[in-house]
Image 1 (cartoon, rainbow, N blue to C red):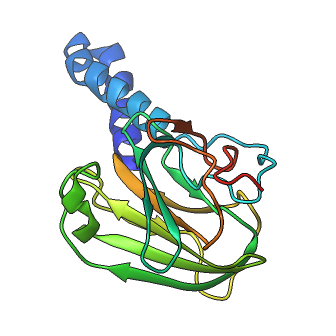
Image 2: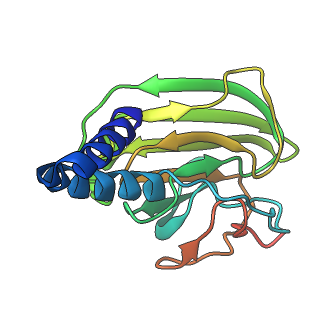
Image 3: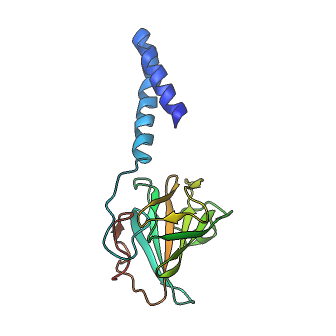
Length: 193
């Protein structure tokens, strides 16, 4: 992002001397503004539920898993904040990068996309969270490593551009969200507890 900001600033200054530079300055300044908006990271007051949404977006699916857990998949469009947050307080037990494809994150085949799989040791036991890259999102940036203590709603990483985050609710925990519902990272409750 810094090269874009520098190019916008330089061409804007040069346009004061020669108006032809404005042809470059205008789109570079617009691109810089769009990037700053996309990478925004607002402060949040954590919600009151036990398990909080790890992502801004829309609940894409809620699926019972064979081991008794429930997967809640949240699709993030390029218009959403892409900083992801811890659904519960705990200790990061593992952060694993898994290589894969880059099909659109709303596609069923995105389960084979590049992803980062998190495991958190929490008061409710092991919580699994998966950050999934999409067709445009080619980079997942974890902020923490195994062994780190994490507070609920704390920032844990970033997925650049459109993507998906799955969280697996423990066995016996009923989801409090529905398919199509909008979520706010660190605020929206995923359970009734």
